[in-house]
Every structure is written in structure tokens, then in C-alpha cells.
Image (cartoon, rainbow, N blue to C red; front, side):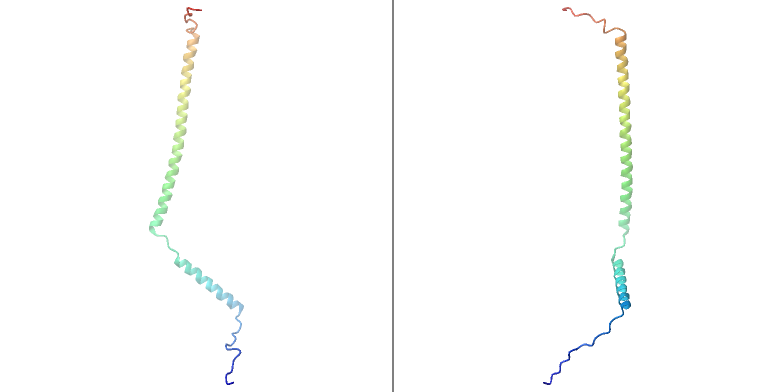
Length: 112
């Protein structure tokens, strides 16, 4: 019977002030954010150069595409003009042939 048991081995800690708790949490979150910011890799010189090169290539491709579209449409217009000129010359030739009566003066077939 010589053993004494304590019901409360540890003394109770006073309740913490709610404002102090909020302040401590905010400090912890700030610390975490700062830690993450330090861990992020800073862009290297090569990455910056690659990014600039991509932008430059993209601009040149866009310019090339536009010039190709313009040249193709110019080709179409050229082909259309040539076709119309050819049709005009054919019309003139056929009109001359019918006006001069060359078709009417063809000899008649023998067996009719």
C-alpha cells in the first residue's frame, strides 16, 4: 500500500489567447510561403534564350504563312487572268470564222 497514484501526472497548461494562436499560425504560413519561394528555380540564361528563340521562330513562321497565302492568291489571280485572256482570244477567233462565212462555204458531201 505504499504506492501513491497521481490522477493528474501533468499539470494543465493555461488556455492560449486566441489572438496569439492566430498570430502564430500566420507566422507559420508566411514562413512556409517564403520557404517555397526560395525553393523555386530561377530561370536560367539558357531558358530565357530558348524562350526568346521560340517567340522569334513563331513570328517568322506566321510571317511565312501569310506571305504564302498572299502568293497563292496572287497565283490564282494570275491564272484566272490568263484563262480569261485565252477565252477572249478563242471567242474572237470563232466570231471571225462565223462572220466571214468560212463555215458556210464548206463543200457539200457527195452522197446526200
